[in-house]
Image (tube, rainbow, N blue to C red):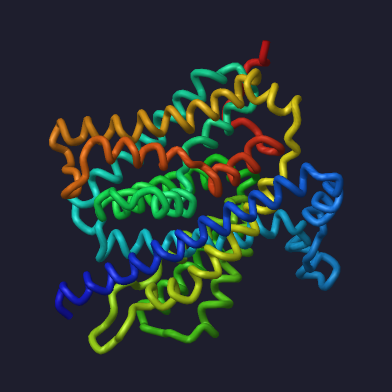
Length: 380
């Protein structure tokens, strides 16, 4: 099959992805707004009760009791629905790496280098400000992620004068950024690692890959494999969302001769609307219901950890992304897309400072329960 039709399909899929993520950003904002209003209303008890309702199979069978799959609605959203979101992100990343804007070294260099800068600088700022806080051993990862849905949604509203390459650059930046964040989650929060369950997950991934290689298309094979991989990853101690991105990266993205769409295109077409309009907004609804009052605002601007996270997310992203871009171009390590200037990169770096879905996930994991990855001296 010629390269041109493949690239045309990739462009068409990219446009569809961007449109859905734009609408999804609006749904995400609405869900977060409803959660904030409800959690700060006289009926806040109902919100808390809803989040703590448990569903699952603990009482159904011996298998269910051994798997401990009786989770709260908030945990189902965090561990289950977000796995679907990361599956779509994995599909998008695989397509961009194979047939999209990131398939060439020159095309991938700038967003990749900017994503690295946008991860390292926020983490360094957070650690520098909150180095005495006992939670910084894991909380430094909170400001490293860029929210794809929010960033693209805002870009669609305010970015009409930016060149078309701005969307592709931001998408590439956000996807690589989230991939790094996923890797950090896998390493940082792999508590009580169970090798036997990890082996089951790896076997499931291998069967998924084999099915793709043998050109098997029936969901009767892939849905059970995906469920097994998700459960095994959940039981292994590695965060369950890693199952989503792993299966996404194993999906075939190039159509065969005579095949209208690749499996990745078909899956993304079917699943992405569910991810953008249901999975991510539902997670945002359960993660955003924070009681906001005078004490909270006072702590936001006096607690060193809160200041470190906010400064790292805002200033760190802007400095890391725009600074990496200027340095990479000056050293001729990468080239800016045609029509994209330094001021455009600076504007996009501000959008990169929007941390929501993955940042909230890391905050959920690191602050309430997770242990620091290295020992810290007590805060003075």
